[in-house]
Length: 127
Image (cartoon, rainbow, N blue to C red):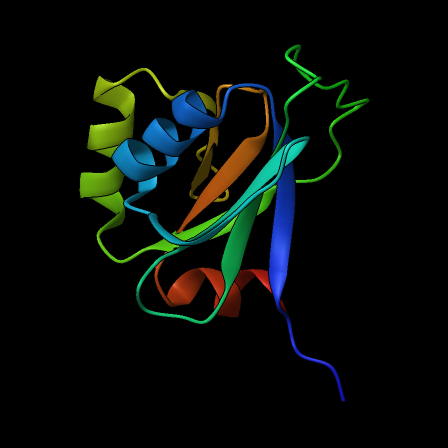
């Protein structure tokens, strides 16, 4: 039996990424591993056991090549309209799909984070 543990993004500027994930999504640092060559920080939402791992390789200051970027992280917003207004006011929204009722944020390294409404989204889009 397997259960989800975490998802990883490699980041080029750890402080900038930590600030984004805190300000945009309210994620908090859970733990940190410091090493001469890298730092790993786990972030959590305070409600689930799922963690986002941010890895900063100290000798890799440039952004990572994300290829065709056919992957993303998704978070559910309990108040979708409020979240959308907040994210829009900070110019963090990079793509909206109004037909599906979702939108995406882009973090400082170009990773996309999907924001979905609470509850009904999964029921409507998994049948």
